[in-house]
Image 1 (cartoon, rainbow, N blue to C red):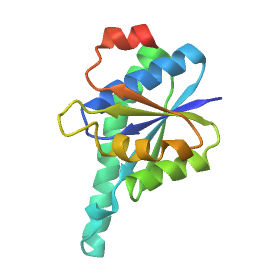
Image 2 (cartoon, helix red, strand yellow):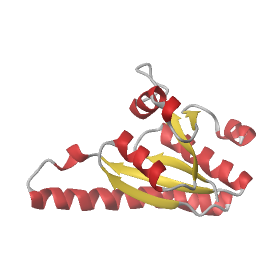
Image 3 (spheres, rainbow, N blue to C red):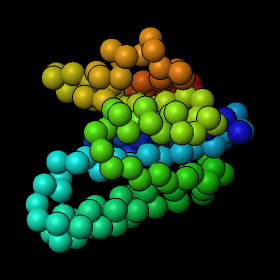
Length: 151
């Protein structure tokens, strides 16, 4: 089964990327893999404190994921899979794409602020010619109705 890989983070544009991935999966018989990345700089503390912070980050990710997962199951009939990785975001995304051959498309949400579409979109767009899969960039300000129309 072809999977749509979507990145879970705290950005506003993450919502549209999740919606797009779920709707595309529902319409094409695919799956959704949700990747959450814990950056390494969050744990530059004493070992015990870093371990506690890492566990708290995983718990926050799980709660955040469950909100999206419930919507995907209830509204789109898609049961997403959560993957949590630790490390630099771009390299972890690339590693996940390499590790799971069923991933067919990377879905990213683009920010709407004047400073640009966001660090992941910027960095991955620069390397898009050498990626093994296509990237779909979903504008962060698309309405739910427009998303439904294009998926």
